[in-house]
Amino acid sequence: MNNKESGGLNAWVNTHVMPIAAKIGSFKPLVAVRDGIAMAMPLIIVGSFAMIVSGFPIPGWSDFLTKTTVHNVSLFQVLAKISNGSFGIMGLISAFGIAWSYANQCKTDGVSAGIISASTFFILTPSIMSGDKTPAEGFPYAYLGSRGLFVAIIFGLISAWIFQWFINHNIQIKMPATVPPAVAKSFSALIPAAVVILIAGCVYWLFAWTGWGNIHDAIMNILSKPLGLLGNTLFGTIISIILVSLFWFVGIHGGNVVNTALQPIWLMQTDANRVLNQAGNLDLEHGGHIITQPFIDNFVYMGGSGATIGLVLCIGYFVWKKRASKQNEVLAPLTIVPGLFNINEPTMFGLPVVLNLMLIIPFIIAPTINAIITYFSMKLGFVPLCNGSVIPWTTPPIISGFLATNSISGSIVQIINIILDILIYLPFIGAINKRQLLNEKKTGEK
Image (cartoon, rainbow, N blue to C red):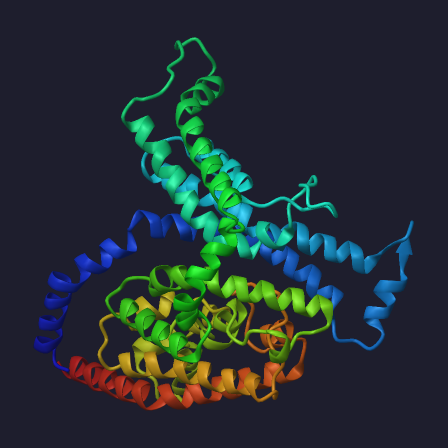
């Protein structure tokens, strides 16, 4: 592609594509969902490590944890409590975080909006029922965790929108300037809080009166099939990979746009695997899931979006063989080290991958191949399903594969994927490197 063609493409993309992509990337509800779930991520990761420790694949380890007790409480129970009290409340934390983010974007008090949303979440969540079918004190972890994510998203956005509407239309109780700010904010939130909480109470009453069960299960039943086609199937995963790659091609963070919409499904399936793993029934026959958050983070997008670990290792190969252009010699140390930790922004904008037609094909094919190979490896039983722990996305491959599956075979399939990623990227990087060498030679001659 010559400079004239490249300039024409850039102009067309900047004129017709970038404005649309930028609007999607800055869409307030989408940003709020992303930020809200991100707020729960530290707890999810801590809970995941507790689960990794409880299920570490060492003979006799599980028996040791179960038999080691203090006042009739075993270490295994302590680790399970840590997992449930962190990973198991992601829905509640997300309800707060989503409303907080949306209200902040609307220039209103995010903390007040988040507190109201959390209250709404509790109102809509069914209580634990005692033997005589009367509500007991407490809520099921299932609804406080991943199963409550849809309610957290929908009512987090609704409650935050109502809150900011009242505040921005000045329908609020204003206190004198001498009143401390914290007190003034609490009175300011009083009217919108009353409206939101009343709506939540009416919704709860409606489901109780009609015998429809609860809104968590109702929303799950409505959304599970259509969203499951994307979030729980190989076909849907491939579609998401293509969309992520196309967004990145025009310079928009594809993961923030596409994966945000599917992340609730992937986290729910991750949590379902966690529960099955704790019960010792983690397999497809008992309802285990192949496609989970660790499947996407640690097996599909090794090196970052586009599985660019293969790309940076190809650059490293040309440098090692002393056949690299000067640009790639400079770029290699800046991309390889971050790439091993799945950080690829230096590659995306340094090589660049963005708006580079020569790389769009491998940028789509490499993660797609990773998804297909990992999917069938798990489906055929060569690799165990992901154990329900969320491994930090910056964990290097091979280590993450072992931790995510509690098996060496998880690391082996990652190695196979990396080799294939290198082979996919190699001819394209070779062509780019050759063109760079020719340009450098021409520049030197001049």
